Image (cartoon, rainbow, N blue to C red; front, side, top):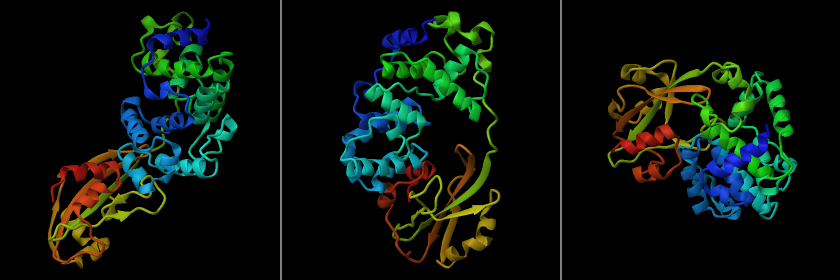
Length: 346
C-alpha cells in the first residue's frame, strides 16, 4: 500500500472546492484553521467569508476592536478562539510587520496556535514536513493501521503523531495533509464510512478485523456540569434595558449578557422573587415579571449543560446605563442570548 500517494490521488479527484484551498497566504490559512477548530466546514465557511470580506489582511483585523471581532464571531462558539485571533493579529501586524512566522516552531509561539494549527500552516504554506493530526486523522490512522491506543490519552497523542510523521511523503506535504483530513471527513466517516469505494481498503486493518465501528478508541468524557441560568431582561417604559459585559474569565469572557442570576435548580417565579440576589431588581419598582420561555432552553457546551430561562421584568423606574433594543442587537452576545434577542419583540 502506497498510503500517501493513494490518498493524494484520491484528494485530486474528490476534494471540495473551498476558498482557503485556493491560496498559500498564511493569514488566510491561519484564519481558516482557527475558525474550523471544533467546527464543521458547513458552519465555518460563512464565517470565513465574512471575516475575509471585513478583514482582507491581518492589518485590517488588527485595527478592529475586540467587541467588533466578537460580534462577527457570534454563534460560532468557543469564544477564546476569537479573543486569541484578535490578539495574534495585533501581534503579527504590530510586532512582526504583518509577516507570519514561517516555521512550525515559530508558529507555535502565536497565541491560540497549537500543534495542529502550526502543522497545518507550516505544511500548507511552506511545505515543511510536519504532520497534522486532528479528529479525522486520528480516525483514518487508527482504522487503517489498527491502533487501539485511546486518542485522547497522553500516550495516544504521541503515538499517533509519530505514526503520522512516519507516513509523510517527500513532496506535496501540504496536499497530503489536506488529503488525509479530507479523506476522514468525506470517506472514512465516524458512523458510515464508504469502505466499498476506499482506495486503501485492501490494507485496512479495521476492515480486515471487522472493527471499523470500534476504532478509534476514546477515553470516557469528563462529567458534564449542569447549570441553571436566569437572565433578567429589564424593560423600562421607554423600552430601555441593561446589558453587562462579562469581564471574568470563562467561555463568554468579554461578551455581553443580561443581568444573570444562577440557581441550583430550575426555579419558579415565586422562587425568583424570593431569591436574595434579586433584591437590587426589586428596588427598581417592579411592574410585571413574566417568563419568556415556558420550558428551560437547553444549551450544550463541551463540559457544561446550561438550562436557561429569560425573565421579562417590566419596571417603573429608569435604569442607569440603559440602552435601546437596537443597541442590544449590535452587541456581541452568547448564541443562546442571540436567539432570544432575535425572537423577542419588546
